[in-house]
Length: 161
Image 1 (tube, rainbow, N blue to C red):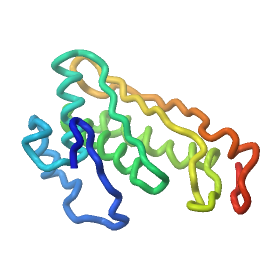
Image 2: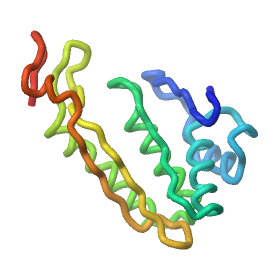
Image 3: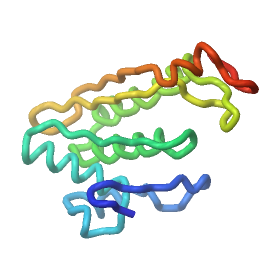
């Protein structure tokens, strides 16, 4: 559901058929958030439209606990933008390369906690860079350390790096 311009989504921990189908990308393209059911594609469309019409940087904040579906949501935002920005293998390749770096980054910064066997100890700021025509031209990921005390002094039954 939406809370203003905020989308609240929940990880169902199972595949939902058609939730991210190409037909849904086409359905949300060019539509305003209030016209269709709440969806990560609507948020991506809203940000992309503002980028193209206002020519100012946009930001989509994806947050949640471990296992909440943050990586999946980021992947779907990039998939949507790659599709609506003209498609093309270069656009998809930029998104794919950013997403494929995720397991490598996690291998250096995840550790066991009481609640999760693979909890991240860092946050990621993922940027998609666009050319003047609105096509993805590159990207970068900036990492920053979270919970420094848990790294140097893990709780009982937890592991650090």
